[in-house]
Length: 241
Image (cartoon, rainbow, N blue to C red; front, side):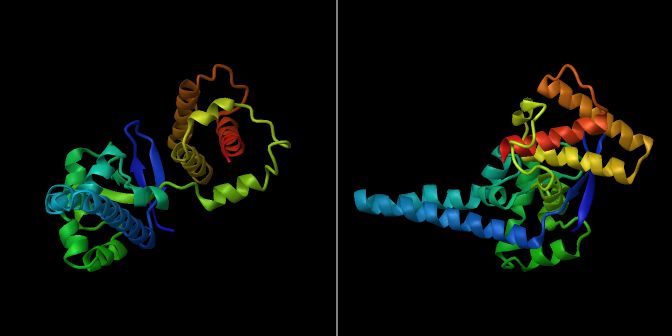
């Protein structure tokens, strides 16, 4: 498993798992399937209702949809096209800030070289040989693609301890406001502290606990910050599975 460390806007060092080339290829295949299914479906309907509109449909609807599909979805869906969403991966900036339209446009522009003209050979070669798994578009935009799924170790470690909702009573029901990506961030913060028990990672854990208390509007916590974060993870698993 290849990982990368990114410093967030709050100066918290977070370790992310880089998306595997296999997952990126599968996400692309899914997106192409959705594109062609949508284009074919609409062209079929138009052909039945008004065949004379087909040519204009292909020029003004189908072709723009094909070319701008990834750009539009990644920009409006914060780094995830439908294919990336299904595969649990997303585009992120290496400097920890939110990617802008210009960043997504740079990645999109180089798809012609990275993917289409070379049939994916250039992208595959660069992703496999780069420490940050970047294709040309990623290098230009200073982005990469990470996995946002909860790691299997988290699922197994926690679920084996929590046999059923009857045997575990959630303490903070407010965790329903969180997303899997948020819980992965909490887990990474805890893991970093457990491996490197220094002042920097202690502060990162304390900051994470404080922000969660503010976000979830939890006013009274009778646990250490480490225990609080563990409880949040356990509660999330039980209440959302």
